[in-house]
Image (cartoon, rainbow, N blue to C red):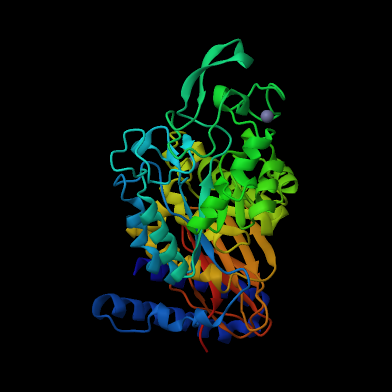
Amino acid sequence: MRGCSIAASQFWLIIMKKNMKHTIRTSLLIGACVMVLTSCAEDDDTSSNGGGVAQEDLKLDLTQFTKADAGVMMQAFYWDVEPKGGWYDEVSTKIEDWSASGINRIWLAAPGKGASGESSMGYDPMDYFDVGEFSQRGAENKETRFGSREELESLIRKSHDNTIEVIADIVMGHNSGGGLQANPFRGDAEVYSLFNEENGNASGKFNRTNEHFHPNDIHNNDEQDLFFAETDLCHDQQYVQDWLWGRDDSVAEFYKSLGFDGWRFDYVKSFAPKWVKAWNDKVGGFSVGENFDGNQDVLKDWVDASGSPAFDFACFYRLEESLDRNQDLTALGEEGNMLRKIYPDKAVTFTANHDTEKDEDANNRISYANKLLAYAYMLTHDGYPTIFYLDYENESFKGQIKNLIQIYNTIATGDIEIIEANKDEYIMKRNGSGNNPGLILYMNISKNAKQHEVSTNWSNKTLIDYANNSKVRLTTDANGNTTIVAPAGSFAIWSIAKE
Ligand code: ZN
Ligand code: ZN
């Protein structure tokens, strides 16, 4: 009831304001206000006896709208997933629901066996060809942390049956878990650079030795970060290129044979972008690079050099700064400060991932209090959005995230027009196209409800909030003008109601 009275008093204010300017609108606006008051009464009825006109019944059937680039990605793991050896099976139970929600691609953790065996999250790659079928590193049952080869193949099949593509995390900057050997390129110092059937490479494919790491007979290091210094893979070595992607039985070809459709390249700061290009030129498929950098120009340069989309860390950090750190939305309205504002088709947006979510520095993650605001931004703008497993499977977020995915896949289309961006408010219009009405996003991080006059593409229409945060019903005049509202510390996504 409190929400209703605020909404109603807002409308009286609007009427007073408008009357001073355009007395002729008075009767129309009083009509609108009566509607608001009526809807409040109905809300009360709804809460007491389940009657009244539910918000859902006023919504257009969004399934009638399609857009070419519909679909969002799910990051289908988080740090230290449990149960060990059972993760692929756990994910398998989610596939139908995810597909029904509009998810068209899932990103799985690196499939090969890591040096830490069944504890490995895949970022300590040892045997790329052991995807859960060889006994090594104490994994008694042969499985990786995520499961067996059969369970992986079964998950991929189920995903494909539900029109979901599957991409593999590719960790090719460094290796871990080899045997000790004297390294002549390091003055015969002992280095863990020996990978063969007896030393961390039970598959016997892509055996490695000193010369495949830096320094070697070609050079001391590549121009990128020397990550995991002693076992930083050298991609200038033909042998390394051949085994990673060149041969018919390369890592990339093997993963394709398992059913993988594409690639998420881990920590691309540690090797040249041309190697991502070479991999993609050889084996194809969707790809995205993890260039862990909040500077949009760094991301743009990497996209230019690799030809691959990249995670939009600039968008992530602008959201974190705007919502958490600075509590000021102005930057969201500034030009060019995200990859998606430069190359919307090459930007893979996200609001959390396995790294950010466990980061103890609050500046590296978006707080739970602001998570849905971040998803609302991401799922109304352009860019290819990634949903984080733990957010989607969090019951307090799930309903809204599903709803926002449907909005992204349907009415979040057309040109983007920023109407307002100030400390407390961010208002953005998607212009739609044809019979697709588009939407207006209104984010409000202040402690008070806000309102703003806008010029819409919709004349003489009733508007409702498709995010269900505001129960107010608005009407536009013959010119499409109206005053939109957003609740305190929340957002609304306005579009036209059913006729
Ligand atoms: Zn090199
Ligand atoms: Zn934060």
